[in-house]
Image 1 (tube, rainbow, N blue to C red):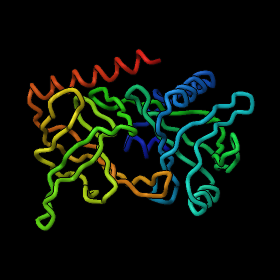
Image 2: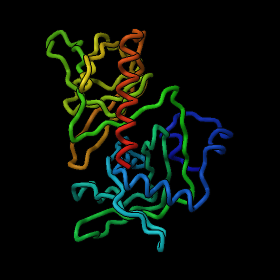
Image 3: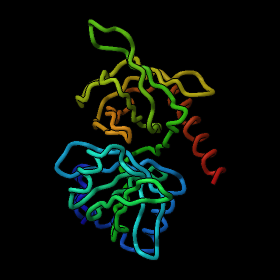
Image 4: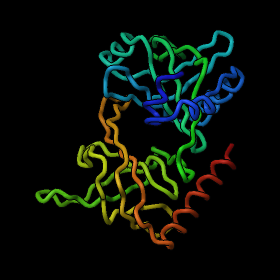
Length: 253
């Protein structure tokens, strides 16, 4: 079983993982090409460290069973990748978590640019554990979440961007380190500045956190949060927004 399942999904029963593990090469190729075509962000976890690198799939080569990914930026970071015996990957496709492990990562040249090459995974885990469907939001034009500061000496609100969102919760991220990484916290009076609608006012509970290393080497704090006592009016507004985002995405395929 893929060891990345524990990273992606926490403690999951062996029976559940067995039911969610894909062994079909044809289906694995289809999923990998979908990840490539939709230009989804992929988290690359480096074993024996607490770092995660954000990358993306550039090409899927069926003839030699390899996958090409965007290169990590920086010689030191690439050296760490090359030194590892395995690599673990996580992404989300249509609200479903996709995770897989491969052997060593190789540094290659693709279209005259540095890139990473891995073996096509022999299995992957496709698991939906969220009560509500979530949609990924674009990073090129980020949607903001304003979090009130809890620091008595710095009362300036924290501006984070929304990574993904659904009717049950939201993932937010920021690079300044002001969000903090502690789980279990309650963040009251947060404002989700969704486009083409009034802001959604909500209380968030931090359920998980991660330090993400971006391709430029900078670090980003990412929090997975649950909505607490979201009023019906706010919930309806959020549901319309999520459905519209998904409708636009499907129409563009």
